[in-house]
Image (cartoon, rainbow, N blue to C red):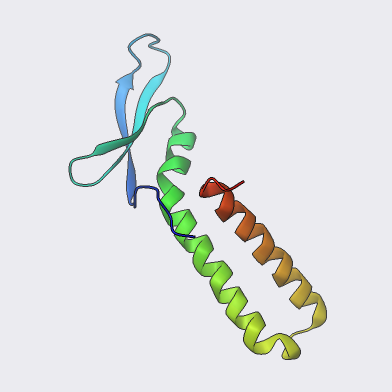
Length: 105
């Protein structure tokens, strides 16, 4: 489950109007002190922010799944059965999204 993507944080850089279409804004996703490019020519600011948040989202979801797994392992017999099922379903969904992010699905 080792991640191979570039570690964050990633940032959004606005390069102004796109060269070929002034109605579009050219955005890049960068990382590091040198502002190395992760992704260039993103046109929608909400998309750029989502992409830039990806490493943090990945790490937080990993931590959430791990924490829920520990709780289930230690307290399964003390948790209401429907909560156990709900947590198991959440962990499965989180695991599937994380696998997709790693390119496994």
